[in-house]
Structure formats: C-alpha cells, structure tokens
Length: 385
Ligand SMILES: Cc1cc2nc3c(=O)[nH]c(=O)nc-3n(C[C@H](O)[C@H](O)[C@H](O)COP(=O)(O)OP(=O)(O)OC[C@H]3O[C@@H](n4cnc5c(N)ncnc54)[C@H](O)[C@@H]3O)c2cc1C
Figure 1 (cartoon, rainbow, N blue to C red):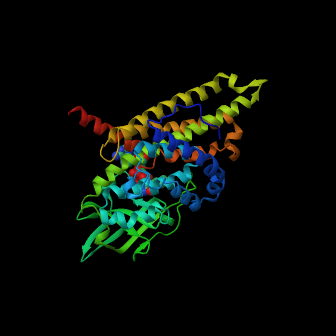
Figure 2: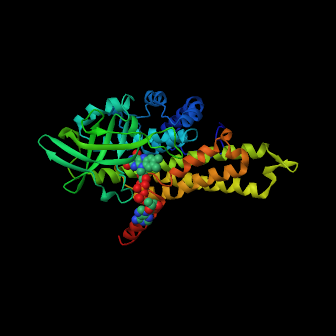
Figure 3: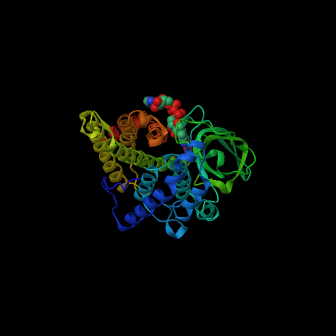
C-alpha cells in the first residue's frame, strides 16, 4: 500500500489528524494482510472486529462520558475512508455495527438502555445490525410489513427483514416495525424466542461481511427494549440514514483512492510499444479523470461531514454526497481495471475486488434513484422557504 501522499488530506483538527494516523497504520499493518483471505472465504473477521474495539473504533461517535471516542461525523467518515482503502467488505460489517446499530441506538436510547447495552457493543463482545429492508420493501420503506403489538409488559413482533448486513452473526438487532401503523424502533437480542436468522445470502462483492434475513415469529420484546417513544422510529431512521450515507460515501472514496494508486503504479511500470503506457493519451485520460473525480468527491464528502451530525440534519448534503461519490468509486475501479488490462481482471492486483465492492454503494443505504428522488423533493421544498 502506498502512503497516499497523492491526495488532499482532510484533517480539520489535531484530533482528526491523530485518528487518521492511527487508522492508516492499523489499515496498512493489520487490515491489509487479511483482506484477500477473508474476502475469498466470504467471512467476517471477528478477531479484526475485536481489534477495532481495542482501538475505540466501535463507539467512535459515542460521547466519551458514555465510554465512546467522542468523535464527530467527520471522524466516522475518516475511519470508513481509511479502512476501505484495504477492505471495503470488512468495513461494511464495521459500518453496520458502529453506525447502523451503535450510533443509531445511542441517539435514540435512554440512560438505562445505554448502561445496559453499550458496554457489550463497544468492547466487541456483541455484534450489532439494523433491520429496515424487507423481502418486498426497500426504497418504499414506509410500506414495511413488520408489525409490533403491545401485549402486557411486552411487544410482540411479527415480520421478516432481508438483506441485513451482519444478521447471520449478530447478537443484537435494531429493528423497525409498525405499531398501530407508526414506525417504531426496538432492540432485539439473539436469544429472544421467535427470532431467527436463517442462512447467509451470497453476494457479488463486500464478501468479508455477511448478509442475511431476520425473521420474527411472535417474537416477544420486553417494553424496556422499546427505543425512544412509540412512533419515534421515523425520526431515528431518517437521522441515522444521513450518517449511513456519508460513511458509505467515504467507502467509495477509499476504493477510489486505492484504485488510483494501483493504476498509477502499474501504468508507470508497464511498457507497451517500447514506452511506458503513461505516455499514451487514452491511459492518461483514465488516470487524470479518475484523480479529478475522486478529489471532487473528497471535497464534497468532507464538506458535508463538517455540516452534519445528530444536532444538525443535512439530508440534501448527504444524499448529494452519496449520489456523486458512489458512481465515482465504481468508475475509478473500472478505469483501474482498464489500465491494468488482463491483469486487472485477475485477483492479483485487487481491482476486481474493489470494482465488485464499489457497485454495492450505488444500491445500499439508498439507491442512486432514491437519492435523485429525495434531492429533487428537498430542493423544491427548500426553494419555497
Ligand atoms: C450488500 C447489502 C447490504 C445491505 N445492508 C442492509 C442493512 O444492513 N440493513 C437494511 O435495512 N438494509 C440493507 N440493505 C438493503 C438496501 O438498503 C436496499 O437494497 C436498498 O435500499 C434498495 O432496496 P431494494 O433492494 O428493495 O430495491 P427496490 O426499492 O425494490 O428498488 C428496485 C429498483 O427500483 C428503483 N426504485 C424504487 N423506488 C423508486 C422510486 N420511487 N423512483 C425511482 N426508482 C425507484 C430502485 O432505485 C431500484 O433501481 C443491504 C443491501 C445489500 C445489497
């Protein structure tokens, strides 16, 4: 892995600088050496996840007084960016835990729930996931069919979630269900009767994280595991989707950075017709355009990250960041493959893995079409204000 001295650095404070140095060193020395093997085996590296806990990365956005690292959303962006330079697959499993579960949970939970659940998810003993998508409902999330009914001191949940990252190995689940038609958030635990996660869903990329279903059949959830208020789920979901979209954008950026490094190194060394292929105009176009697009994505993502957080909603910015960055990540990985020719298509230079991983970011956490829809709606609304 090169030093990435090629790229603009976005470290607004000394704390961000130190966090980047730490995660960059960890990625180079620990994440990179295991990436090929775990992606080939299609397994989530639980030992690596534990090491993330030791570095304080699992509670990155949780305030220090509650046991977290007390970083802002820009810190979370930075971590996902750096980790994805080596292993986007593992990073997706990390994101499902640290952002989709921990960050979401923290801002919705009361003091008793924080005291009960945070220690296990911050020290890596318990893996978390978030269930929003269902077999028949993704973008149209308000149409979800999972229901919750109050029964004495419990709620009873019925329904099915699908395409859930970490579901096969998760110990703790943040689940959205409809209670009297209103979106409500619950914490489910692995040993709850009526909860099951059958099998693993095989997929094209992001193979170092697992994907699966969560089935709830008359699953009894104690009232103490209701997060926030009945009907509060929509606010939790929308607030956390902004953090999700920014960190997913940062993953596209990590992929693009790495693919640029690989293509420059390869093109510099590869000879064709008696000269380096960097002398060929068409190769120059792949390299130069990849670089310009990646720097533009970087500027947008980090600018939005400065202006977004639990107390500062920014749906327009986060939709725009992911709408722009996801195709850049995929295009740059594809450009790298083209520059490497047949070698790019083979495993050795890693770009085929990055290209497969990059495609997910045009779908997960909101499809490109969903971002176009949201942005247009919000811009029209903003114009009238
Ligand atoms: C690897 C992976 C990991 C995931 N992890 C999680 C997770 O941890 N938790 C979770 O809850 N979900 C997760 N998902 C689900 C993901 O968020 C959904 O796949 C995504 O939101 C799209 O939903 P869908 O697949 O049902 O597609 P659909 O919503 O059915 O969309 C199908 C097509 O129709 C288009 N479309 C739909 N509605 C509109 C519209 N109004 N205007 C224009 N076009 C439209 C879409 O853009 C798409 O092209 C994951 C998915 C994958 C593949």
